[in-house]
Length: 433
Ligand SMILES: NC(=O)c1ccc[n+]([C@@H]2O[C@H](COP(=O)([O-])OP(=O)(O)OC[C@H]3O[C@@H](n4cnc5c(N)ncnc54)[C@H](OP(=O)(O)O)[C@@H]3O)[C@@H](O)[C@H]2O)c1
Image 1 (spheres, rainbow, N blue to C red):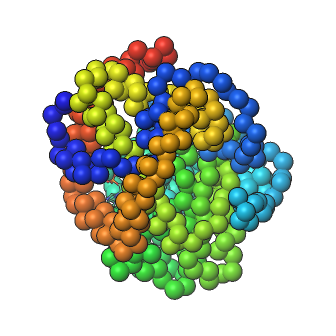
Image 2 (cartoon, rainbow, N blue to C red):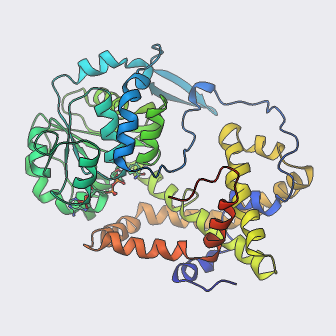
Image 3 (spheres, helix red, strand yellow):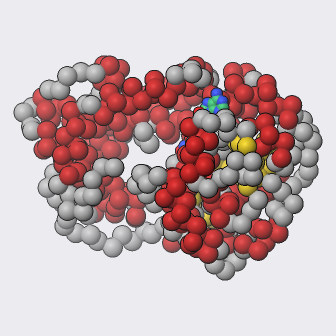
């Protein structure tokens, strides 16, 4: 067995847990290629817009150059289908579409605005470049000469013209898009708040700062609209989908509506930054579901689950390559894409009857084992425990190095070292960088 890292020690008490990924892995063996039956139930095609894209590793400048020629043209909405009320498994919800905002309308709507994008991490990069390619007046505000400043310059933001120190950008902007890290939003708030004057709009991509105001102390001025557009994916995906002429799904919400136009502005900004469909939510619901999901199945749970399954295989004498293939490679390369395309039953149907029988038997076992953990996780989000941890860790001056150290530990786990070799054998392998 591989040597135990501190991360493994942390996860070990919860090893037999985690929901549906385990059911896939526990039962799937050699059967994936058999009967791809046409699934009788299909999601409406128009909504199938958010298939995850692999993280793009190209440099910012490459991304910007590749995008520049095509993006504005690609992003021009086709047709004008408008607002939709859709029935989601018995619950009616209102969805807003990019198709309702042709480019000319979007540009006209923001003709008197300057979008001041504060922070240039993953979201700043994706949202900023998309809004710029949509022909809007966008400026970036980041710490002068920091890492983000350098990356913004690589993407073609020009110091003194479209790239400014944070305070200066806020003074110039009418729509202040706070895309600093959540910890930095809290730390910088005392300095930034007085600059967000009447008539400006305050925009977030996460409900974190204002919902957990007892911990963050971010209390917006009473005389500005406060809105949210939260893309449901990494900023890299926001950019990639836009360049492909598609759009990411985003949640939109209003915290404070002073002008009576806050919601309309949120929808328009959602389109501006590259959303295809926008789902209504509240700041509270957005932050609770987001913190919960990323700690759960999206990131934390999947790492714990992969590791648990891998360790049992290794303990029982399976080789690293066999353990990795049966845990990660078949999941990510063969089965999860099928779930993404047409749902869980479609993936089940693509597997052997042996695999299906086992998966159907084990799914409820994993569900039962996991439910208390998910309940505990949700409570930890609701009561602010997760927020306080995040503020404490990510508020350190050494936050980048500290996080990287823990990520390096994961990278160094046997499972992921074995994975590098397995990936290198893929027919389409092009290297890791
Ligand atoms: N990433 C996602 O997948 C995602 C998805 C949806 C929503 N969101 C939300 O979008 C917002 C931005 O997230 P992100 O992932 O793009 O950014 P991030 O990586 O969390 O934050 C990076 C930015 O924060 C700046 N920053 C950090 N500490 C600072 C400080 N003390 N003073 C000034 N600037 C500081 C960095 O500048 P330096 O380079 O100068 O340090 C950088 O520009 C967050 O609210 C996040 O929750 C993120």
